[in-house]
Length: 489
Image (tube, rainbow, N blue to C red; front, side, top):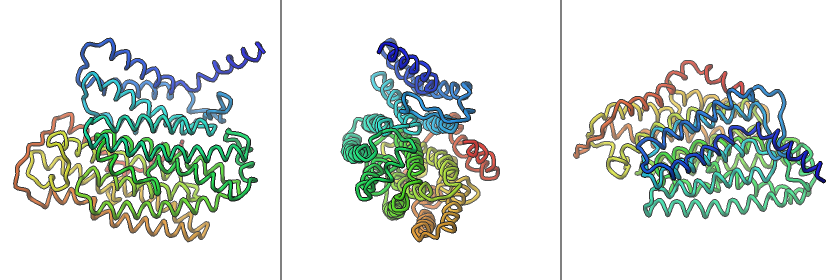
């Protein structure tokens, strides 16, 4: 008995080296909380600096550890976590996407700043576990870490709208979590295991059809909640409107990317079962409805951040369609699309955060008022929304071209009518997207308001806008730079 315990402890010690990025993020949270207790004054910008240091340190550990060159997957902590070179590269991508939000994180007072940054890092930590999960329990813990921290971040504005948004998010999250956990319990009942091994999926495929399909649907409901796809999309508009712009931007990018990767990995495991066809069809239906609902709801919006919430739903539909399409380029198309979406989305959220910080609200018609530096903000918004629509010469065009090419490739190889429907609806909603995305550039360049406003811009803020917009133009002309990096994943 003692020898077994010693061997287990020794194995755990050996496995710890493979989760160094997670350890770095965990220690960063502890350090930030301790620093809050020690410092008598929280200096402006310190929260951004600490977050950047934590992300850079985690990225440095991944790059210099040699983990990105692992030849075979490594199963650690008794198969609870699966590590591979691809997983580490995906962690680097999540770190990059998280860093894009740092410029417009609010400068909070001492009582709130350390908690805000700690929750931010904890969400990233949860996404790491989601993409490296080797068991049902790890998936659940990863999703719950992301969800619980998100509920608290939403409420950080401490006004009625933020609290309402947080409570709505919590209620929908609790339902989705319970349904997903119920599905996990059924899967365990069928397979007798919680570990996501080939044997697990083989046993699942040999189980009673109705029982297994129901359990998979229950589990996918939890996954769809994380990416904001139908039928678990209802929380997004109120949540994004009530949240700080930096939180809304972060939730629209990082957890969504992790959720899509989780769905992709789960479907890959189901490929050898007899249920994959019906599950893919259900997901295609979900993607089609998601695109339609998000598009036609976005048309009616008068608040910019709420419009961006519905557009986030539309993009979830695009990405869900390609994730469940049996295409060889599906995953690379999703990652390319998420990078393009992240830069453009952060740009518009950053500009909207400046408008809200100056005037307390972000109505679309507000952008028609004459304000200082209007040309700078207008050009940046125009580049970002043109990329979100998918018009050249922006990175969004290349991203949508890859996405629709993969969908068409999938249709040619399968002749599945739902794949064709997803392709057609995707094109339709992309065209309709022109109408609502160009509302803000129209207000800035065409409409003319009566009340002059002062919306200043510093050199640092101008540099931030360049960081967001230049890649959208440059990578359009040199897409192979990004494609090569993604191909290595």
